Image 1: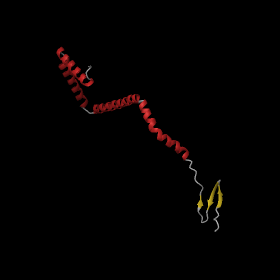
Image 2: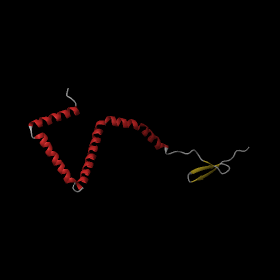
Image 3: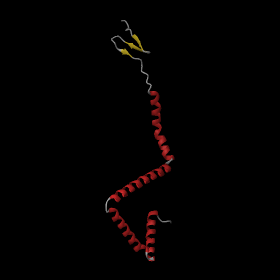
Image 4: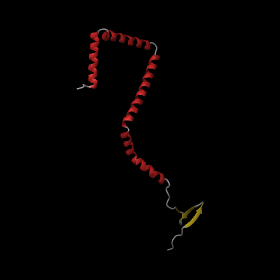
Length: 136
């Protein structure tokens, strides 16, 4: 039996081999994407190491930055909420009256007499001890 002949046709700097029956035999394809995929996969496989190292090295500064950002967002939301409340008719003056009333009651209850001031100081120390703990 005679071996099939493979015809070679050259087109624009590339060679296409054709087998009998019209099938095209292509050379093994070069994969140019592998040259940039390999470094990317290597980098992504080592990424957890670098992320853990970064967060362990800079934990305190990142915490400070996160708290500052959260404080800024909280202040912005609070000011927006107060601005919205201030725009409601009669609500702002009512809140001012409530604040003045509470301030007057506080002064009357705790600040006018020396014995009441001692009582207030004792309550403040009690709360401080509960929050911060005892010094012993």
